[in-house]
Length: 432
Ligand code: AMP
Image: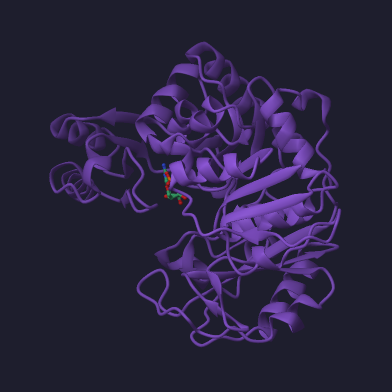
């Protein structure tokens, strides 16, 4: 099978790495990929994965490439091409592609759409309202005593969420998004949720239109600095499993979310085939959904795919063809920890082109897989080429062992300005 993976981050390198292990993969490309994807070899025949210089958002060029190379199966990593309708486009031309279609991508591209859907189908979420009127919005924040979260409706590069502790802050947040248009058109409508306290976890479920199969739990670390301080980032590290939900609680949570979700999709004529990634707050009143994403998490993918035992080509194929009910997801009992090494200054301004040294020494350590995110080849060297540079991932017999292995690998890798959190998985190990 000829396979094309779309995207350039750590998530996509992890997808490439796992798909390349499948005996079904005979030739693979990644558009645009990174220096790590380009180093992968196919298990079947030793062929190299080829990176193609086409952006993940250039739909016409991606289509032309897939047609020219007669790609059998395209896998989409990031949310933007999904929201732009890449799945609908490829399907129109008879090409097999994995990822949600444009209608289903609304769960991520519109928070108002998601919030209304959750209300309509009884999916546990925060008390919330959706607004396109400033005065009504401010009235609603007052009913929450100002302790709320104000969210721009559309995609705002992860920045359109403002947490408020009192009414004055809440009114400022509403003005900033709706009047000041801080996030442009994305803020024409807003969602206001009550502020929820608890432990935040990431859930993932693979869906095929009728069946949804839930993954084990994982937890991301969104802030730049140890102790959840500093600015929000794309994610500085993950681990799986988390100790915060037992198997039974996870299954119960999955049912509470996924059954009404799939039922609602059928009722609304949404053919949900792809990945559903709800952000969940475990509150004292039970799990509540904060938001839906419609693709794999980054860096959640890195810990999930190092634990996954199934053939990923077969899994994603079943997600497209509607046969997931015939497949049982199998996970290694081992724990996985991913520590992101970022460029100095990230998530603010940072420089690119710093030489990354000693990657081979880290890769030699047992249980370690170094996924590339923002990297590029420059002559014979691998250099930094983005904010999040590497996702240093390790499996271990338990979380403590996986954490130790991941940090041992991190210590071996060097580039100017490298920064990373030292407390990935610490919440699980410290028991809070
Ligand atoms: P979102 O993009 O909607 O997931 O929001 C980004 C982050 O804001 C989440 O990962 C949470 O840490 C925080 N957040 C969002 N909604 C709430 C809420 N209702 N209560 C508390 N924190 C929230």
